[in-house]
Image 1 (spheres, rainbow, N blue to C red):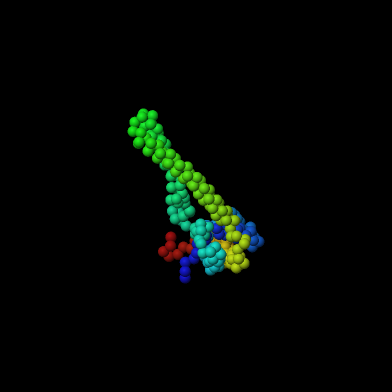
Image 2: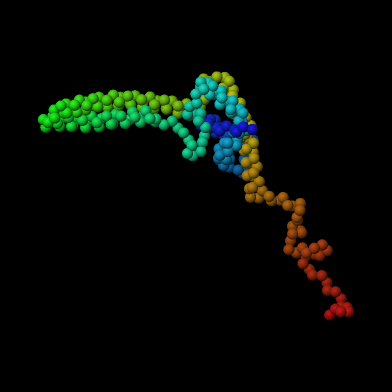
Length: 256
């Protein structure tokens, strides 16, 4: 038997909605009122048991995820990354090019200022005119490089921010409503299987266990094996009433 799939980040909102829908059903609400189990506690337990409840609808989820990946052209982005434990979560970072785009203008500006100061300083001192002209030329060239790199960096950062905002908005809104009918049917089949085979049996088991472990749940279970008439301190055995001692034996040979 294969390993069950882990729930993707973009599907957590669907799972939470399905969990709330099952908790709000008349059957669960009636059982909660009878058992006295708080609904918030049941919801927390359901959220913590994602791996257990989603395993019951693993086949439907695999089909839904495969169709969604196919509709996106086979490209897996940040929204389809599976949930992972601490230290194993990957998110798109800035990248080497973005870092260079930020550092290049700063370094070029510092170099330009240094070369210009040295070049014009030598010109004022009227010493080494050839070196002064070279430093001034390199300084102005570095300043031009700094301006061009700053412009490119601003455009690149703006495009990166716009792309990331679009990805985050799509992750929050969930699957696109313009998806194929097969994708919508696969999503609905997964949600139905998740509610009926995963979440509902788990909640019923949690309510039953909570009701069984509640104080006073075991009262009256031993009534057919014991009775107050036979459990009192005055009972000493059949044929005796209360704690009255038996009558003394009459005197005879060998008895005082």
